[in-house]
Length: 173
Image (cartoon, rainbow, N blue to C red):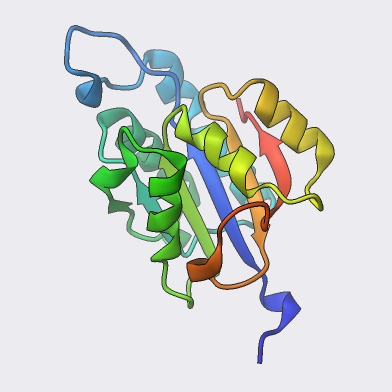
């Protein structure tokens, strides 16, 4: 028996502002601003009582650091993040297949990644029931630390296109 109060949520977060030192792209750390701003994403989630049961993050340095700042805010309620190399240099389709693997007992999943797939995923998932302002803002500009929240109607395994209701697009600062 499924129960609508048992609604699933997907949170998609783009990493914070990154620095450009002379290192391979995968190794780029957050800039000072990224380190200063990233905890705000965690605070935004706490204010709305959105605590992820699972967090999957790209294994790039800047996404790992962003995730660390978020879980430091979430404190004891934070799950141990799972690093997935498939979320680096990925397509929206590849990311969706990672999301589709999520175990059904996970009610709220957080995915931390990169442009362009964060925005492409938003465009792909947003249903006609989505908050129009949120979708327009996300489509127009997806800055660092941009975060989308979706209500997921069915099973993770069947999530595909246009079937998630975007409720928020925010850039916590």
